[in-house]
Length: 252
Image (cartoon, rainbow, N blue to C red; front, side, top):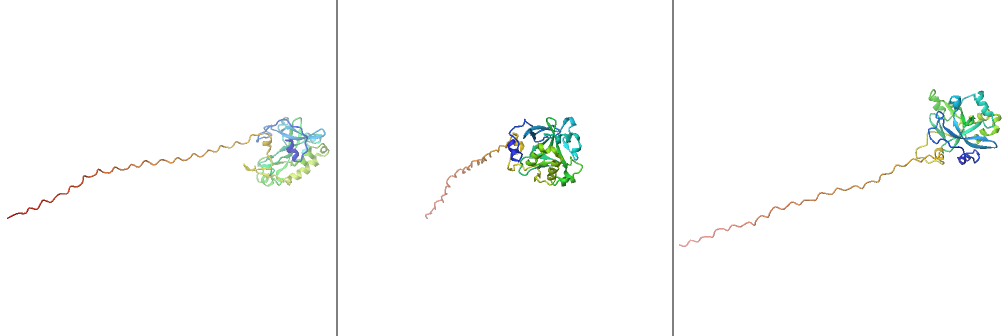
């Protein structure tokens, strides 16, 4: 996992996070957990955190003017209160992912010892989901996560960002609104070849089993019924030629 995060441009250390859920239908309502980039002493590292805060009645999403909320402001301004969730996609009415299915990051706040909430923006103001959000207003959350590349995630999680977290988040929000990362919508086509594996592969999910192709059974050509030769009718006895009676010569 760490190697793929580092390749994405986020320089985490070699520490391995605790095990986390590996399913594909992970949600905050289910209390799913994820790998997250966090600040640890003098280095960025990976640790496992749970989506949503149960003690806050399941809160998992941060809305506009979030710095006005004491809980969120306290986390954002603490040295290790910001984190970035490692993902390969998110779903807001439709799957959003990188064209090559490589990892990217979602900005979040680290709450307590093991939870997180994600930062979001108005989906109607984003080029990625704007048109869809406007057409389906009133359905779904209408929010778009603040997604980032590796460098942005590293900056957000860095201890120095505690000085002005709102300004750092605003810059990344502007990039997300213009889709600077180049995300696309829609799940990858089944069987499509990508440049890297998805997180499900990183987590060890079993590859789908291929159905065994049944071998064709050679067609059996029905045997033609044996021809029955009709018996020849019994030979007729040779015809007996009738002799004409001998001519009688009368003598006077």
